[in-house]
Length: 318
Image: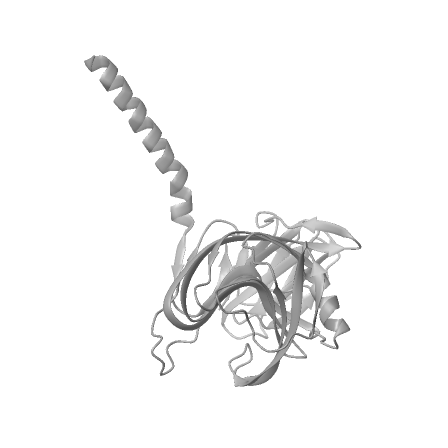
């Protein structure tokens, strides 16, 4: 009887130890964020912005945890206004975004494909789920069907409000799904076309594009995993992490940054920490370089997009 008990205990300890080993890589990869920042995590761009209390009684600070690959989770309580999520440093009008997870928007939170363009400065939302209040309010300009659902279109204007270029006046483009969901696919090109049909044209320079969680004067939580692909001539090209094939050296760099591409054709963008594009290259050979002497010391990002996948590399300029 004692021998049987010991055997069962050994088996139980083995199972528990194996489970801990499975969880350990996720725990080590996790990163908790509570202050405004952008960056790269496990092959995905992330953004976290919190407006702060700003003299209101909504003094809570949201907490974002970066998980493996495209996963992130957020909890917020009595928060004024924030937006945070994972995605890509450079947006695309043809991206197909896949997302899955859980979302509780409370009284006023939403889950959306979110991003910005410049020239013109536009903030855009494709809202997939929301709390008890339906954003953005106002009267719909019409509706259209996409990805198995119906979306209402809205156009709003923000005057002297925070933006990716500082305080500015800009328009917001909205597609709001009438049937809420926390998992699914967004064919973003359908929304670009529907907005364009209403005279709503996005800018020519694409800034970041993420699957965001946003909260306003509310409390809630989300746990979302995002991935994506680019539609090219009707063919969806899935993204994968090609970090091991996209090599850069030296890093830190003083004068010339060398990089090797995993394949061609490809686009390479040099970005500031704020996502501003400094340089766009379309190299045709695997071995390439960038003259970094014209840029100030600091942190930059080198973003690669090719048919093999996408990756963002952090660069230190000294």
